[in-house]
Amino acid sequence: MEASQGTLKRRFAYLLSLLERAGSTFVRFPLSIISAIVAAAVAQLLVEFDAGPDAAADALWPIVMVAILGIPLFYCLRVLGESRGWPRRILLAMQMAGLAALVAYYMAMPAPVKGADVVTFLLLLSGVLLAATFLPFLGRPGEQNGFWQYNKMMFLRLAGAALYSMVLYIGLSLALVACETLLGFDFHEEIYLELWYWLIIVYSAWFFLAGIPEDVRSLQEAEDYPTGLRVFAQYVLIPLVVLYLIILLAYTIKIIFQWQLPDGWVGYPVIGVSILGMLALLLVHPIRDKAENKWIVPYARFFYWALFPLIILVAVAIWTRIAEYGLTENRYLVVVATAWLFGIAIYFTLARKKDIRVIPITLCIVSVLSAFGPWGATNFARRSQLDHLREILTAEGLMVDGVVDDARKHLEFERAKEISNVVEYIGAFHGMDLIRDWYAQPEKLPDEMSTELALEQMGLERIYRWQEEPEAVYVSTSAPNPLTVDDFDFLYSLSCCYDDTTVFRAMLEGETELTVESGVLRLGQRDDVTGALEIDLAPMLIDLRNREELDEPYGLEEATFEAESPRYRLVIYLEQANLGGEGDSLSISSLTATLLVKLK
Image 1 (spheres, rainbow, N blue to C red):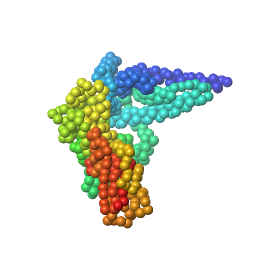
Image 2 (image 1 turned 120 degrees about the vertical axis):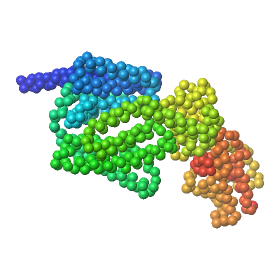
Image 3 (image 1 turned 90 degrees about the horizontal axis):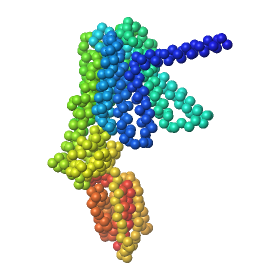
Image 4 (image 1 turned 90 degrees about the vertical axis):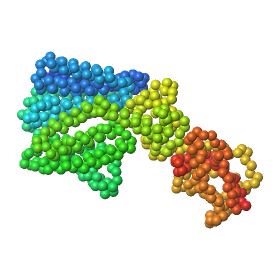
């Protein structure tokens, strides 16, 4: 009995200690935790507004973004003040200054949030997160070990927060399922997503903050190095980096021998592998000089030298894409990341004294500078794409004297697709208001102009990014009714669905065969080469397809074809067809026609 009471007291004491630690963490980082609570609460409202009015969701998204940004921002200010020994009043003033900056950012953020606003937010968030890694040790060149120990601690706390949040989410989700199944509770479906938001935002932030020591500079004297971290870096991360480096270098050699331009997609794996490789080197930094780890030095040298051909590869690939399609936020960031990688590679290959803090400091500066100003990602991309679209429209005759012509146009598929993609990008990332004044009567256009309407006012139809060829055009006419057949021997209803490899074949009588292959109709005996009647339907079908695309009228006269040979007379009344292709090319998905055949 006494033993069970002692166990209960210990558990109760542990619970009290846990609550006390949570309380002290809140007192130390109040604005960070409040920001997390606000972000989770508003995210929950967004889940509930999922089927509600769009205006409500548009107004809530900026709050979530600003609140998420506030979590690392207030953390940075607090830890910076503690590391500098600032008095309480200065700490409070800095926190209020951070709060004012967030309010100003919220006031400047439009509603609804566009893609460009999300890019700016992510760049700012990246900059603040990177600042958290070095601010306490900024300006202290002799404290590289403290810097490393501090970042190791943050890395492990983040990993622990993610792991515990996941385990808690699984456990609590199963508890909710049990309550529904066994106890008859009726929870709304959104509760699982809402629970995830509260755990991944509030719980994980609180857990992380609880493990940050008040005197982070004391970590300079720490010398512990977790075995698990060493195993992960040496036997998992570094081998993966080497493998991907070999693959990317092999690809570089391949395109050099084939003398072809690299794929534009190659920039992402190169940047990813570069970041992973630097992370691996940072993880093994404290043990690089130990006798059993002498391999780290040649690995580091190989890694940074191997980056140079890959940097050239990415530069060629991204320059080709920009020259052809203009600059977007993604391409801007690839250019900036490539330039940053080049600078880092030069520093770590040529500098005599190497400071690992250069990596997060320079990357933080690049992220923040890329978020704002005329040189920023969104402003640069907006100007580039507007100029690119204006050039295309002018070259294709769709814009005259700065005004878009809404007459129906027929462009080559790839050109029309490029225009559609640029208009879609402008609408999603910056808003259609940027091109509203291009139209002859902008006041008659709706406030929220869709991509389809914007293209329609240019005389074009929308072509989606995933389309590889023009969509089929549906052509429809009617055969004469009633149909005179006195002078003919056969009336045949042709109805076939086929692709380019399919041959439609039918026997009109014992010897005469009718075949249709790739738009060519053949009438005659199978072995008769000279007497058979062959008709290429492509010119008539292409004409009808073009008329349909340009919304020009057509009827029985345009859909009727007559042909005659010494042995046969043939009249074709086209009724329906699904046609693809562009220009002089033609693809047929289906064809329906009425044929009159006379044997001479």
